[in-house]
Length: 520
Ligand SMILES: C[S@@+](CC[C@H](N)C(=O)[O-])C[C@H]1O[C@@H](n2cnc3c(N)ncnc32)[C@H](O)[C@@H]1O
Image 1: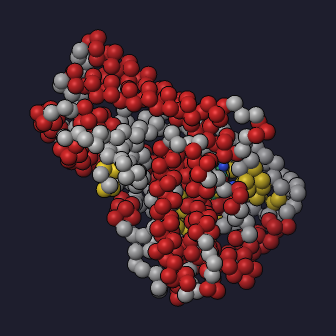
Image 2: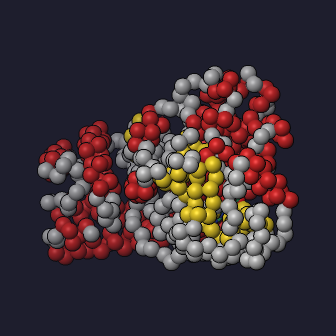
Image 3: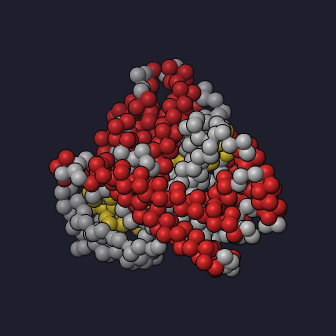
């Protein structure tokens, strides 16, 4: 097999050093194939922190940084499919050297001309004859400038053209510790070449990257702006990610001092900006996270199957059409099955009807619970044993881990915990593979989850109130984003709440229901 899917780097932990977290990500990094990419996205939403220790899950490494957190869990619900969307915008510039009756060239942009001339020279070949760079509602984008048929090759970008960690000046690289990861190296490469200005071999590309003012990742939101999303788990995730990036910056600062020609006066703010450029525009290639000029103008559509691939024999990044496009159609790819929290943290946007969205429960165990240590041990043991199996099973309405947590937290005696452990031992060590034999306890655990849903719904309503009455002129882009995020979460919690309520009613009425009937 010569062709493989090029993985976008997002929805991985990309921060900082090769510590335990990074090791986990690397260890579980799937080989580039569609099925693994799917698996990665499917199992992408789980976070647990207990008593200040991080318990990272494979694949996803969100951690809650609050020291008050005793036991926190983020979990997900499955959603319905939404209809496909394709925008059609007239393009502004066609960079193809050949002419065709289908080409419509509007607003020819000198910057694009320079950029495409630079790219053609750097790659030694034409990148595409059927695509144009244009402006969309989401910044720059790629548009068909000729009819494209499914199966056609839309573009080819040689891997050698990509900016990757191996482009970092070797004298800088050699001074960085072994624990400095490739994402940081790529960030430093961007900063180094930005400082070189027009003398940089990447100048035409770097000039095309979005300005700080056009980037809306919550990493860049002020404290006041972040207050708008305090009810969302993204608030915790953002603070955590900011802290991680800060730590990374501090860990490389001593090296930056040695290269004032590149890094004199580089601030944390600039570092963060470059870091987020890497996070939002890099793709995983054999050279590590790579900025692929031209390919990184592709915007995201959650409903397309269009993916970038890497062709080993030719060492090129390729896009092959999976559908027909008419001239003027925007060509979109999927960045993966990403929920709004990931989209907003990494890319600075949310999808109002995101079918991959999941409500995130923040559940804190009471600190004074004398059984806390036992509960934590039991829950962690079950996580360790259950993680592989959970990956393989399809998600039911309530994720197994969340059920497990609720069951453990609702125990009021050692005997009850013991009972749970015995049942788990009969089910591959998993605490919540099937409904509990003790129906009262099963009901209690689900009522507990239902009460958390109701609480979240109330909190979200309160958070949305000030955002709902704004006059359109007073509304900033980030206010709209915050409202879309919170509304999406509200919908999820309402749906989860309805399901839990129905489940509890069924338990109360029948007292015993078949496992499969209840869980699917
Ligand atoms: C890989 S770049 C794509 C090119 C980018 N539009 C540009 O102007 O360079 C990813 C960025 O594009 C924007 N973007 C991509 N897809 C989007 C979407 N569906 N909705 C809103 N913004 C999107 C976001 O700003 C995101 O961080």
